[in-house]
Image (cartoon, rainbow, N blue to C red; front, side):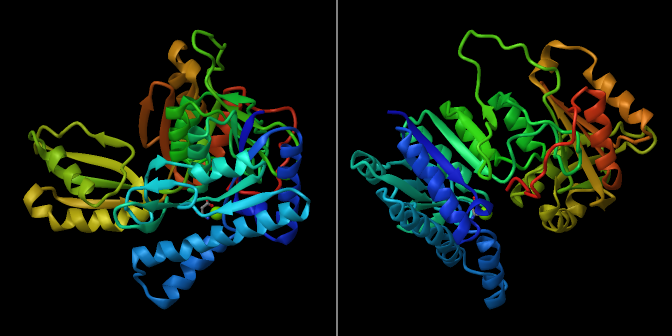
Amino acid sequence: MALIVQKFGGSSVADAESIKRVAKRIVETRRAGNDVVVAVSAMGDTTDELIDLALEVTPMPDPREMDMLLTTGERISMALLAMSIKSLGHEARSYTGSQAGMITDGQHGAARIVDVTPVRVREALDDGAIAIVAGFQGFNRDSRDITTLGRGGSDTTAVALAAALDAEVCEIFTDVDGVFTADPRIVPRARKIDRVTSEEMLELAAAGAKVLYIRAVEYARRHGVTLHVRSSFNNNVGTLVADPPEGEQMEEPIITGVAHDLSEAKITVVGVPDVPGKAAEIFTIVAKTGANIDMIVQNVSAAATGRTDISFTLPKTDGQRVLTALTAERGAVGFENLQYDDQIGKLSVVGAGMRTNAGVSAQLFTALFEAGINIEMISTSEIRISVVTRADTLAQATRVIHTAFGLDGGSDARVHGGTGR
Ligand code: ASP
Ligand code: MG
C-alpha cells in the first residue's frame, strides 16, 4: 500500500461545495488502495480576513495571539473536510498541527519545523482512517505555544509530513494545472512543464514563480520528497518536481522557465568611501533589520572622488525599515545619500542545461536589446540569469524572452483565473 500526502490550498476549499468535491477526490485516492494523509489550508481568503480583523483591533497585534488567531482558519477547514469524508462513508480524523506532532522553534509568524512526530497520524492510518492535518501550524516545546510557519506554510506542512511518513509522493493541489514555463496570465503561450528538478524549482520559486513556496521546495529537496503539483479542478497530470535517480542523466532543456517578480525594490547607497570594510558595515546594518537582500551591485569608483555607489534589491515590504536603519548610520558609514526605487521588475531565466551551454546570457541580452528593453542590473547563479528592468516593461520582457528561448506552446494556455496560490 502506497502512502500519499495530499495538500489542498485555500482556493481548493473555498466553500462547502469545494470541500465536498475535495473530500470525494481524497476518498477516491483512498479507495484506489492508498493510505492518505491530507494537509489543508484555511478556506479561501480566511487568513487575510483574520489578519485584517486583528489590525482593526490593534495596529500591532501580539505575535503569540496572532498565531492563536490565524491557526483557527485551518482548524475550520480540517474539521469540515473530515466531516465531509465521513459522510461519504469513509473514516477520517482531523488533527491540529500540535496533535500531528509538527514541532517548531518559537518564532511566532515564521516558525521553522525542527521535528515531526506524527504518532497520531500513523495510528489513524493503522486504523484505516484518512488523516487530515491543519496546515501552516505547529507547536513549540519550550514555550508550549502554538506557532505558524509563515504565509503559504501549508505547503511546508505537507512536505514535512511526506518526509516524516516516507510517503511515495506529496501531491500539491492548487488552482492551476502545474508549474508553467512562465506565468500564463502574462505569457499566454506558456506551457505546463512535465518534470523539473528540485534545484530548478528552487531557483524558479526564488525568482518569483508563485506556484510553490520556496521553503517547501527546500524541505522537499533536502529530504528527497517527490512533489506533484496539480490542479484540484481536473484530473490532469501536473508537474513532477523530482530529481533523476542517482547516476541517470536526463537530457536537460537549456531553459526550463522564465520567472518574473514585481515585489522587489532597489536601494542605492550613493557616494560610499571606497575603502575596505564599507560594504561590510552597510550590509551588517541591513542584516540587523532582518531584510532578505537579493542582488548586489557595486560600481567602479570614480578616481577623482574615491567614492562608489552600491545598489541592492530587496522585498518592497522591507524597504522602509532598511532606509530608516541606513539613514540612522549615514554619518558613521560616511556615504552621501540614499536612493529608493520601487518601480523595478526582475526577470529570471532558469535551466540546468545552462551549465553545459555557452551563450545563454548573450542570447538573453540580445533579445532584450532587440525589444528596446534596458537592463539595469544583472545577477547569475550556475543555472539562473536574472536582470532588473523598469517595472512597466517587465511583462513585455517576459514574453520576448519566452519566445526567444523557444518556450512558446502551440496554443494559448488555459487559465482558470487562479493565482497558483
Ligand atoms: N492559510 C495560510 C496562508 O494563507 C497558509 C497557507 O495557505 O498555506 O498563508
Ligand atoms: Mg491561503
